Image (cartoon, rainbow, N blue to C red):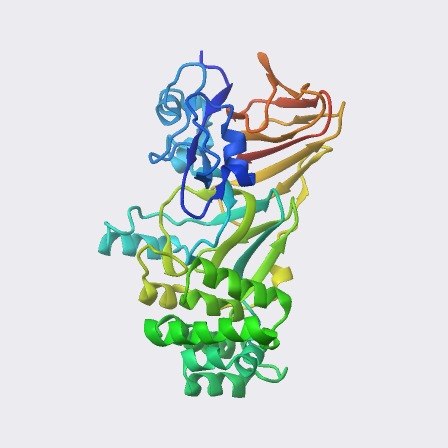
Length: 423
C-alpha cells in the first residue's frame, strides 16, 4: 500500500527575471536542501515547481519515482471525484516565484480561446487548457493587475504628452472627451474606450515608442514629469530592464497592485497583468498558455492579446482577494478563487500551537516557508506516520482523504497548501 503522505523533491528554474541567489531569492533558499542542487550566488533563481508538469516534474524523495507516474499507479491518492473530473493527474501546478525584474505584459486565454489557439498555432500554444493563476505574497510584492479606471488614464493622457504621442492624438482626444470627468459612463462605453486606447498603444511602431520612452525618462530624471514617486520609479525601473519598450507606458494604463505578505490576487482569464517584483506563492491550472505583448524578449502576439481582453476596469483595492477561515481550523485561512482546479491554504502557527486539517477529498501539496526557533522546526503527522520538518522549503504531497496535523515545535511556522476537490 502506498503511503498517503510523502516528501517531494522539486525543481528550481533559472530565468533571467529571477532574483539572484545572493540577493535572497526564496527559490534558491528553499532549494538548497534538495539533493543534487548546486547553489550559485550570481545565478537568477526564478521558480520552484511543485507538481507533475513535464517541464520540471517533482519526484518522491524516498524512491526517486516521478510523481505523475506514481499518481497514475495509485489513483486513490487523487480521490475518486478528482479522477472522474480531471483524470489521473494533478489539475494544478504550485510554485514559488522570486521576481527581480518585470515579467511580460500578458494574459491567459479562457478554455474556449485556448482550444482555438492550440488548434491554430500548436507550436506556440502547446495545450488546449486555460491557465487561471493566483498569487499570495511571501514578501512585499508589486504587479500590474487589470485596467485602471478610465478617469485615471485620461488624467495621465493630459499629464504625459509622450503617452498621447504614442497612442495618437485622435485616440487620446476621444478618450479624454469621454472620461476626463467623473460623469457616469456605461460599462460598454468604458470597455470600448479601453480597447481602442490599449490597442493603439500596443500596436504602435517600435521606433516612435522608443523615442517617446526616452523623452519621458529624461523628463522624469530632470523634473519628475509631474508624476508621483510610484510612477516615476516604475518608469525608470521598467526602462532600465527593457529600454524603450512599449510596456513602460502600461504604468499609466494598468493598476499597480502592492501586496503585503499573506495578501493575494487572483488573475482571471483574459485579464492583463505582469508581476513586477517580490517573492510569491503562485498556483495555476496546469497549462503553458501565455499571450504576451510587452516587457519580454519572447514572442509577442499583440492581435490576440488586444482582441481577447475583457477590458473591465476597477481600482487596485478590488484586485485583492479576501481570505476566509477554513472549516474547523483555528490558524488557517483559505484563498478560494472562482475556478475548479485549485484553492490555497495559509497556516501560521506560533510556538507550541498545532493545526489539524480535516481530510480533503482530493490531493494537495504542502510547503513549509518559515520555521523559527533554534532548529526545532515543525512536526507533520498523519494517520500512519509522522515527519520532522527541519528546513524551510520542505515540500510534502498529501493524498486524498488524509487528515494531517502540523505542530510548531520551537517557534513560528508558516506553511502553504494547494489542493483540489471536485463535486
